[in-house]
Length: 433
Image 1 (cartoon, helix red, strand yellow):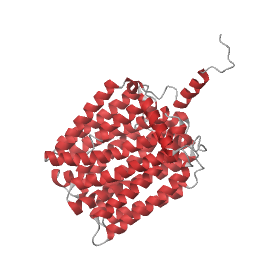
Image 2 (cartoon, one colour):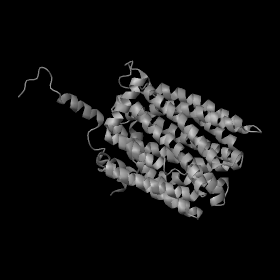
Image 3 (cartoon, helix red, strand yellow):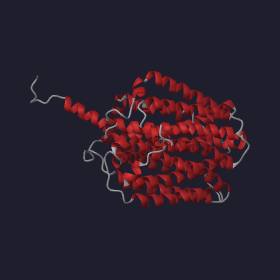
Image 4 (cartoon, one colour):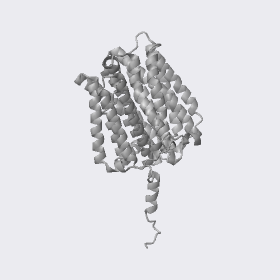
């Protein structure tokens, strides 16, 4: 295999100015998002001393995201997607700025962090499906995997720098600075996205009742075994093998470090993910896309299980990086397959379901990890058990869902399939042969 077939494909950046703007915005936004995520976790842990409280905050954030994403999916299929993204990002910037003010107080309020999590999660959820649904309109149809890889790359760039930087800032100036920087990053993102053209969805003029619109999305999901499999296989990873809520406890007690060690734990998966994104050129060329996806999720499960069993910090970081490598390949393939098998009129609603399980799922998984750690009396054991359960779930789905195994990016898209089906229906004027 030639080097050009392995290194990340940057064709979407060369061919689309609008995608370049989105790429730049996502790159800096993910840096700020990780600053806020780590800072909020550290603040809750320092104020309460409980990993369960950290997981509970993650759950609250996830539930609000879930509500926002479901509503945002309908919104993204009805109104201009550019407008939705700009308005929701502006509101989120205000909420994060309020977090900075609370953290700067002599006596920060834990309840306010939970309230802000609800607001930020709900508003971000409203805008997430619109951003995801807009991507297929910014790049050529054959560039979906490449665009997904570049989107993942932005996440990992922020994921590598953000957590470590958050640990350093939290140990120095304090967590209030983390929140303040993220709020400023949101403002810069608004300036970058402002030049985008209007992005109305297909069929946006139809006045469909929101409940009926959501029902149409669920009906499509139930009827498409590939899309259903894409959602279920990720549940195995994000619910059963999500150890992030354990990182503050493992960094300070299991590995005997401090805030800097906690930052390294959050950084390690992103390092592996970044390497995976850089070497993602194969994702758009592999023929057996579904099988490659199954293998990628299995790599995540193995990495998390081995991390939980590690007693040495650097060995644990290595296994977290391996998990991140598998997670990146999984995300790129799932995103591309989802967009490939979903028609444009449903991109917002189906994308919202994908984002819901990808975002709210880890929140449930983090709370579950905290509860299991308390029950077992060991955070490492909870992480290892989660990895094993993830592997069992992946194996079950691989056997039970042959459509997922056979899924490929090289077959007809959803739009092409619907067009062919319509053309195959005889017209009233057609005469039998």
